[in-house]
Image 1 (tube, rainbow, N blue to C red):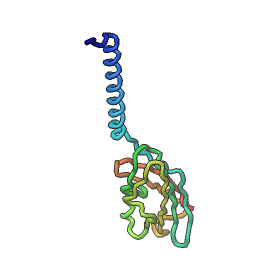
Image 2 (tube, rainbow, N blue to C red; image 1 turned 30 degrees about the horizontal axis):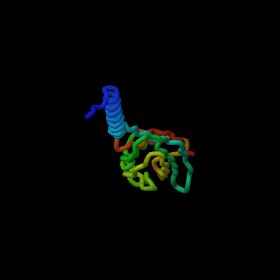
Image 3 (tube, rainbow, N blue to C red; image 1 turned 60 degrees about the vertical axis):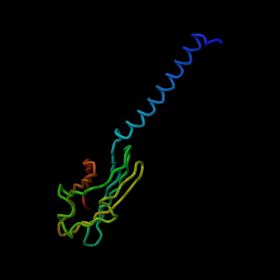
Image 4 (spheres, helix red, strand yellow; image 1 turned 45 degrees about the vertical axis):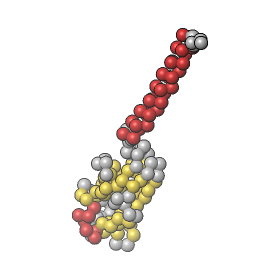
Length: 141
């Protein structure tokens, strides 16, 4: 009975080692991708219009990150939106909404003229569940 030559045995061992190292590298790449996702919302448009007794501020978002982003809170002039009571209303189901990677989302803020005036700058900050803030300033018409 003949054994395989040392050259063939070396080639087989090296091939198996390379195959195992490639499998491990691909597995590690898959594991680390889940932990290295980046959340990034881009406010690509925001403008205001006066409609009756309200200012309506339209905000357009795009998730350009590698992970989904969930909106946790909207701040207006550095105060949570619900502090203003009926003087601020949000339309579009914003709080708790998840914006998937590559997805666009828009919403409107109705600001009462009793608290806000023409020519006033309004700072709008979107805070996500990850704790990141995305600010935008809009001047009311």
